[in-house]
Image 1 (cartoon, protein in one colour):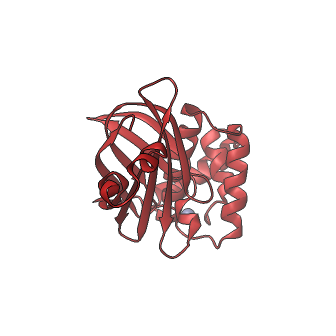
Image 2: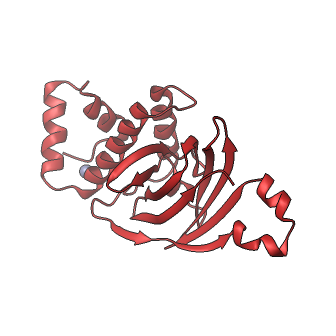
Length: 207
Ligand SMILES: [Zn+2]
């Protein structure tokens, strides 16, 4: 059997395919197609995240939007089943620039951190939220070659120790939002198609 369309793989995960098609997809994946296996793993992660997060639009609409988006691009592996864990390096920290600029205005606008790893930049901004001691986080994962398919619907997770406490998905421009994050020290994990980026020990607090 040839590779399944992305719609078929979505239906496969939603268990809405008939028995014969389900069997066909399962045996194709069992036969070792890494293209379908990778796409399936990615879809699984996206659909799981859709169930656990406050998103702007209903889950079905998000899935449809993603499908449209990926159909416009040439089909290529969305996801490599085996990915390396890469630590991102801090390139810029606005709180370290206070002596060089107007400290008051930087504080009022919150904090900005810029990281780099592989061929991605990760921009993270923190602004105070209500209730007190919570922070809104807005970030963007930017691919160096403007290949935005690579950063669409990427799972962003905030860890404390071994537990993922919060998670969200990026939109079609790699933008993500996490609202009312309690103060604390977090590790960010960014599930990209070719690697998993880790940002260690990010301090989230009221500035
Ligand atoms: Zn396949």
